[in-house]
Length: 334
Length: 110
Image (cartoon, chains in turn red, cyan):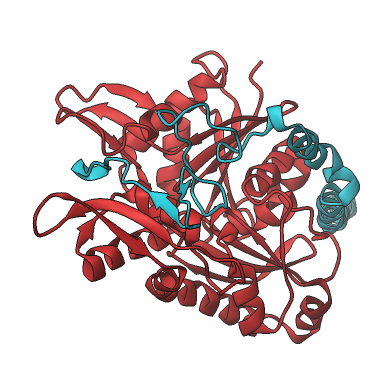
């Protein structure tokens, strides 16, 4: 008998929750393929380690961008391999709940469910990421009070107001922490004339990146390839520079939070002042982001205790109470 | 003729009764399913799922976040989707952070 699964199919990482077992898989959403034969060489962490380090015949790709499937066939193969790793076979076909960005189109929605069904799921249903995040972050969404959740993922940032088990107001932008990395890469290329890779940009973000100044900040020595000479070169990057580089992306996220606040009914708005907003998702871990949002919205911002797992935990709860909560699936209410 | 009318009337009454009952049941179904949904979203119902993660994050050896895991070596870096205070950087004697390119896109660190 197959155990039902909840999947957080993220642009950066894929997490799988198995009914009755908890989180059984947490891997980067990356697949490595043989370019010539199309054969899958690695998935998850193993494939992630190959990014940018492969010989010509191997390609390591992220099949999801901006929360959407960019390559349907590769995504399907990745889901199939991930499901196989958690014990799904031709004879054990589980029910699957998949978390997706709330702003995905009907076509993208169908692409995700089709990919899961072809990968071995008996039935595939979708749930909005902010709703799953609110459930997983342990917010009192069963009560008639305003709960606000800001989910900043690799490719999307979503803000939702939730009350009585439903989304009251929602705002989503296809901007996330990968855009922050890209902004850092572009800045270094433009201002310092050196090329750095995706992963180095991410390291810079984690080491000295911030959305708001803090008292203890240090600068970083960054090594890359000089665009003029082609030789290795070291430059010193300050936190102010990184803040400047990522400001457009951060501002776009903050603006979407403000738009969501303005959409909320007044009765619920007053709750936010007392209860605050909750940050979840890997992008929410950017230093100073909570302070920046708090400063611009004048609403307290709190970090979830489980920012990276909140979404899959929420979906996991839905799979544990499938019959009672199936009304929350995307399309069920429309 | 009277018997026929009585039969038609009886059938009509039965049909109306069935419709009325099913409507009542239907509206009651809505109330019940909403109640079930709200109950399933209560903190008590969520406790077992939420507690699992708190238990595992309490124990460093069971942390599921690849970024929080201690890294065995430089050759086994961990991926992440967001930002975190932890990374592979080297803190220089002057307090700065040293970040080398990991070799992506043909770029190699020194």
